[in-house]
Image (spheres, rainbow, N blue to C red):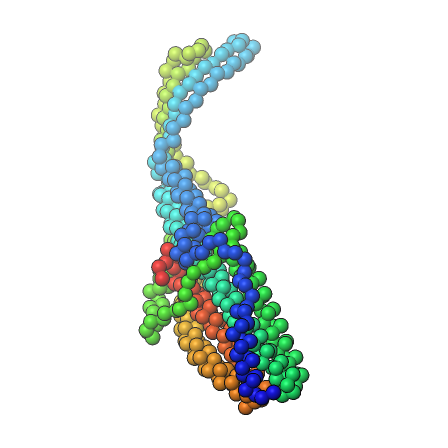
Amino acid sequence: MKPGIFVFLFIVFAACSPAGPAGAQEVHEILTWENCVQEAAKNHPDLIVAVENVSQSVSQKQITASTLYPQVTSDVSAGTAKSAASGTKDTYSYGVSGSQLIFDGFKTVSDVKAAGQNIQAAKENYRFVSSDVRQRLRTAFISLLRAQALIEVTEDIARIRKNNLVLITLRYQSGLEHKGALLTAEANLAQAKFEVEQAKRDLIVAQWQLTKELGRTDFMAVAVQGEFGVDVSGDQNPDFKALAAIHPSLQVTVAQKNAAVYGVKAAKENFFPVVTGDADIGKTSSHWPPQSNTWSVGLGLSLPLFEGGLKTAQLDQAKSVLTEAQANERSTYDGVILALEQSWASLKDAAETVAVKQKFLVATEERSRIAQAQYSIGMMSYDNWTIIEDDLVQAKKDLLDAQANALQAEANWVLAKGETLEYEE
């Protein structure tokens, strides 16, 4: 058989071959990134927990501040007493009593201010949680986007391997190729088919991952719509110190440090005496309803003389908490700066890698086209041709991986900046 016939049969078979296996399961919903952000912001359980922590901190401040206001209570009582001298005696009374904190060395005021800082810490923690949720949501979105594209890539590779097997089979049957080449082509096709099925399984896993990060309770076969492009404009580095200063994780430690400052003040003010005002008014008698009016007004002063070193220990503890908070603030700031530096460098590297892999794919596609024509007419050996085909297959995978890695690097950069779910690309 003449070499030209190989080309003819190869072209006819390639034109008639099916594109490859069908896609994964039926998709019920297509989501954009904006759809995912809106849904996660409403339903993600981690955000619900963070919101409730803020609410609890607000309530705790109100509880602490309540001591500064008058404490008013009412009471009604009835009783019977018996003695040998006077016999049985009934007593009935009702009234209203109140007390007001007048002075406690401003300890309660400091406690209220500390509680206010705890509210700020809870709010900043919400931002931190939102930033973390965005990162996980973005990672799940990218994984599903990559899984969808990987099915197309693996099916394309399977088509290439199948067409190669057809060509090698024709040459082997004509005695122009050895059996090792045929077996290798069959193994390559088997590997390609396996990768198609593997990509379909990976797609389902990615759908589950996105379902979780959306805050959904029931699984649904979804698809995502998005682009792989990453734009890193300009070569000038951002102002890392300015970004670090507003990072939510750092702001949490700042609020905690401020609360610890007020904690030390409260511990010092705890050494002052406590002065309270008390008043009550009511009625009492031996019959119901009671008729005799009663009232009293007074001041009270409390100053513990010996508590076994309790207040001194509390002050030492408060100072230690403050020192710990200051060190934690410094450590967090250093960590944020380092994360910004690393993520920015990784983003630049990932974006440039995509451009390089695109060039490699263009080059390998051209080499494959030329090599295939040369091999089909016997102008190139199998060993050289299969190396070029393997390079083409790898280049397709490498480009997809580089594009997905660039999107992930971009997500890591957004996380390093502390941006929340409301961040706009």
